[in-house]
Image 1: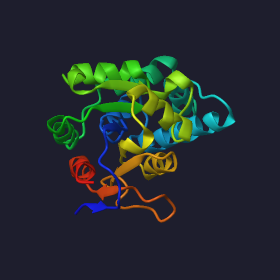
Image 2 (image 1 turned 180 degrees about the vertical axis):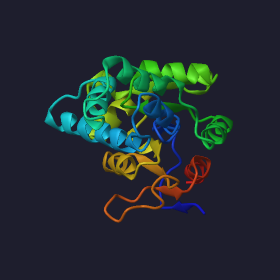
Image 3 (image 1 turned 90 degrees about the horizontal axis):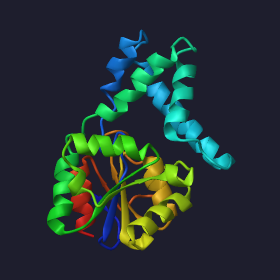
Image 4 (image 1 turned 135 degrees about the vertical axis):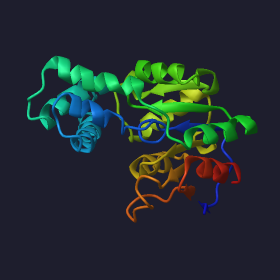
Length: 226
């Protein structure tokens, strides 16, 4: 079921990347390969996001990989060598698409609406992923907030992405599985669509997204129907 609130059909769509377009689950095997329990994946990634946002609030954020490297060392109790840490982090370039990513992109392509990958991760890593998957030509571009030394969700990050895409915030939609991300987009004046397959619903403390559905393709269909 698609839940919608009033809004205008977007002219441009920005897709969050990690967990939205790309599956993180295969990284778990790399934790095991370096002698760490697989369940540390979630703690490591949550810490990376948390501290990246904290550094952003303090002024400027280091590049995603530098933050991730520090958080992986902390999460492992400083038991990993630099080579082992690099082995885990190199796995980001080999991550696969989420099952609902391709049908979502196909709906936008059929509608003639350009869409971008929008991340605070490394642009080069994301480029390698879409090249490997043969999807580079589908995206209008890849936008990484590393260019402005920031993590999402400050408003300036969404506005920067809109400027790069050449679209007004109110005609640009952010699609994500993280409610903090859609919250940031709505507060910045963008349209937003939340796929609930990660969080299971919309937390009461966030700004209501314009479209809520379980899958990315359902969210995109809802945005196209605004």
